[in-house]
Image (cartoon, rainbow, N blue to C red):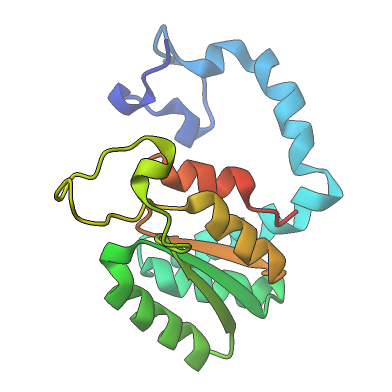
Length: 173
């Protein structure tokens, strides 16, 4: 089992392999061969290079939104998608406004889109049994942004698991 979060030597950051812990993934460098080929594929190469360039410029200095703006500019993106949580709608409004001020077209979709009752898929309402409660709809968030041909999607506070479903169904490649 790999436990990089517990590592105290961080040989991976140093470019050396002298003091690898017994559970370091770098003890099995043969596993890296196939995944490394993916970076060279035309659909990944430019994206990864631009992401790495932005990382080098802003790592530890820029807030996430600045990174998104700079990365999107460097990639030549104009139409950005934003999937956001109902609980962060005020923040999403601010983020959308900032992105628009920087020249981007922003398509945004809230998690409660469709106003589908939770009990539709067998989830009991938590607030009150007699009160309507809409389910989060991350798959539809992805579908709606796909339909709008967004070039890059941003997630603002989707719940754990819902974010994974959103990424699974987003079609950007």
